[in-house]
Length: 147
Figure 1 (cartoon, rainbow, N blue to C red):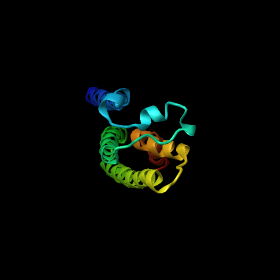
Figure 2 (cartoon, rainbow, N blue to C red; figure 1 turned 45 degrees about the vertical axis):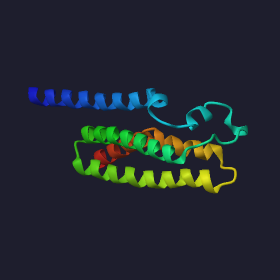
Figure 3 (spheres, rainbow, N blue to C red; figure 1 turned 30 degrees about the vertical axis):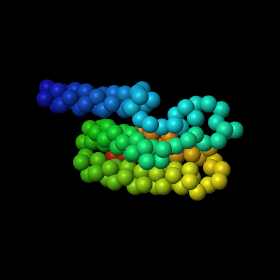
């Protein structure tokens, strides 16, 4: 019983560490990542033109941020559900969602004369925030209790 309690303490500590990682990515986003949309979407952006972008730099910074968020999210999923296959499945879904969201984001930026800023905002939000984790945890929990 003591061993199980200590294992759970270790798991909760590691989950807290992963959550702290997600919080730190968010807290230091201005210093860590190139994203001209951070300030753009904080202002009255509806009547403004899109900011000047360095597509190459934006691509690599979005990829890096998504990868860091995915890493911490997969750790949380693995520790919460203690299922390696669920973590691998989640990793696959994270990858597919990244490809779809990324193509949609840059497609709107470059192939739309006047992109819908709200759609652009929400696609970018899914790329830079761990919202997929917030969707996966209740879904996996429901699946687990339904077995």
